[in-house]
Image (cartoon, rainbow, N blue to C red; front, side, top):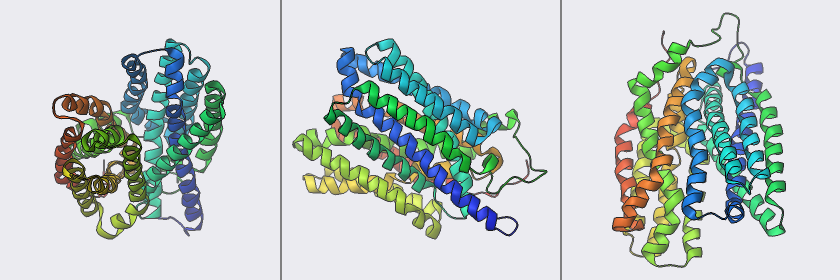
Length: 401
């Protein structure tokens, strides 16, 4: 994987590994920092939950707009510049929310740019993460996504501290925006150039033509990987949005116990992403992902039909472990050919993010008819489909254009 003597390249790849981890952690920190102040923003705006949901949708619209376009952006300016530009866009959106959080228009506008920047930033750092993975010669993408999870823990913890100390929303979120605007662009200096797994040599192609970037939307393998990611992301999103409420309502327990079950799910998912690369390196993507899907489905069934809370809690842990690898390994698979990594990761991420947009209302609709706990079974159907889609993620060898 390394060129020349390998010494310079090994140092470059190690530096890039740290840089990508910081980029992922920064994204998680920014997201959780904003999320930690939503109650105060809602109180200041004096809106109903329904209106708040429409305001929050602006962030999803921004992200959904940016993600399909990000392949073209990354393919044209490279991952490092894309992360710089989009992290600054995200920071600007967060700062807009911070200074205008008493006005609906300001919050909605800020959320759109926050989501837009975050969506394209996410694709760019996944492309760079795949380049680092190729340079290392072993799986590491799930660890980068674990870094995002750790960033959310840090952001949520800092946000809780700010609330407890009475720090105003404006001061808190402006400080976060400044930190993101400084730390994330600075870390991109360690990125590998042009998404390669080595420094660029003379004669290497600089850019893939736009035609090649758009072609990803017609490729069978890319679309199957995107569908696989959508299925696994639906399960992950269901756990994030509905797991706590489902066990509270379904098992008739106190709210804090439901929060503990949710915390166990998040901890298991983070652990699965941190230690999962060992399974991938040992058994390969397809076997590891099939084991993950089977584990997630078993966990979901235990949550749904566990009868008693300890069984449901064990199911939440299995569900977290099982969903951990789906999204990050899907990104790695989409980026197997570095020439088309930006376009294919963008396409895969766009399909995957549909789950985060459609999942909450779909589960909510079912919950109105069968209850929140049994509504989770919808995710089980998609996990079963993901099991059969796993072969699409098998590694490929880049061939001629």
